[in-house]
Length: 176
Image (cartoon, rainbow, N blue to C red; front, side):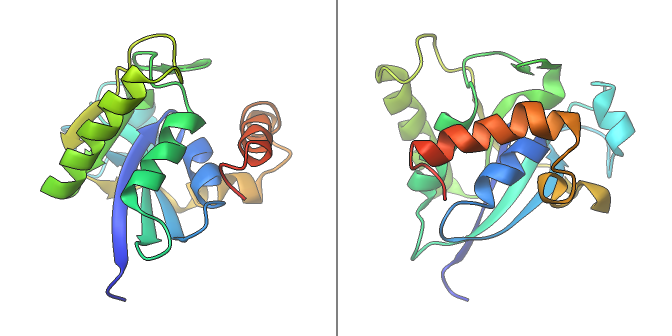
């Protein structure tokens, strides 16, 4: 498919990011993974230690004729708090940092412009701390992370963190 593109984003726990983007029109697939660290093919346990330098990310494959990278970023900015350094809610550590891993020069430029716009808007009271960096050292997460919310809707993290986030974004017509 000629319109198939990829975005790699970290916005806290990848279960949340995955659940959000699976509901965005034009998104073809979402894969939890790890990026930006020094360890090759890390495990979830290693990531959780905070010592690998990786962020939990979602690798999003989308149809660029249906959804643009700009729209992907609009959803990203509204689906997590990009003003908290190395933290999303009770998830604390560099693995939960807000980060846009760009795949090419165009994505880098779009991400930088988008970040400036959001910083100037009234969407967030505090300055954006989101990193914008070239995708490096990416690896897929273990299979049991795939479709985590869909497969574990009654797990406490899903009930108390993911479900309210999805409900809010659906109510605001950000996702379906």
